[in-house]
Image 1 (cartoon, rainbow, N blue to C red):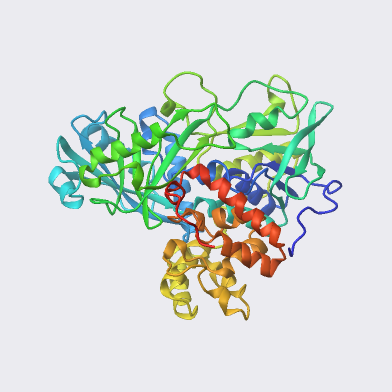
Image 2 (tube, rainbow, N blue to C red):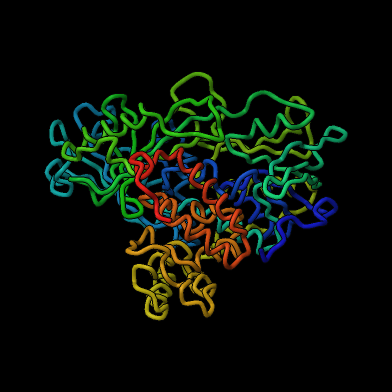
Length: 559
């Protein structure tokens, strides 16, 4: 491998900040802090974004349903951040139309929905997206003929954002942090928070890939481990009350079905009144999510039969001709939201706003430690800004201005969507790739697509898909695998397939390309045959939690 995994001087390096957890919030904090000049160490016991971030519904949205809980500030913050992300990451974040059908049995009637839409527009006065429309019963059935017409009263149509590959949003933040000087070490589990004289002064961590233990020191540590926040806190000599009370959210991925809408549907479930989404995604459809209190194994979360049946039945209710069944589910995924602990009340009523918890101002007065509770994918950048401002305050230094609201992410370009569209058109003409492959690289890597191709060098085979025939979502080329390891901090085959190339989100969850990808790493980056085989088996073991159709049917996998 071309880069040193763990710097030899990590124990003696004068870090200003240690960030524990490389989900979207941790990666965002590391990027902001590094861009402002802090010496940052970012650690994660797994990979970048391999927790809650990769299990989201993949929306950059204001949280329409938060209005009924009067969280107006959260909605305004979310809508403002949505606009910023559309500009700094136009390759990853795109506008998406939503339709909200209203039925006689709906808890939220036409007047309430109309009022919510009006408030949504008012709270996003600086938006570039279109304003909402109210559709009559006839208009909505003309637009989506397959909707159940019985009891249908009207619908609202509005625009929000979609990030098809939420994993890559976090990866690009981590890559940017690294390019601004941060040390990023994944597969490094923090085993202890070192406490001296009542303050956290560093961490001890274990290298889960290479073995051995290391320590690092910094005056400030941020615990942004998502659902694992309490687990990290238990690893210091002092402990406080429970902070996280996560809820489980599960999703289904299915092929297009009879009556599948072009727009995203935001539907109220008939059985319990809970809203969920049916979203065009990655050439297929994403259906979810559930919202259940969860006390199980945080390292192995999967959708259960009841959740799968719930989402199938509710989708078949609103689109009677869909005829979905368990057999038609390509795969599922499930994760835990890192919400504040709330032992009572409806899961949906637990706030999605974030808390920056300063342990020095709580009962046990632990200095040098912040913990992040909650937070949304949409608001990660503002959470990061607030956290870094707080870090500077704890360091006793004046905070430089945050620049992440304007500075494009690595795949973005200055000028937002118009500039990126111009770049994309030129790349399609000059890349020498079939349009579907050029489009794939642009959607994943944005303005860095030419850098991905450059990894092929003189080896034309690395410009070819790993399998044939291919489609947009499984047209991964060999150069992408090398780019993942050389330029995007991947350490394992799972990192490359699930959170860099996104091949693992294809219909066969990359079980048709995993061996080919491992052979490329073996040939070009020095893996032994034994390591390559181990990586393939580890990958296949990991994706069993998705309950993929290709495994359920026990089809032979390509060699």
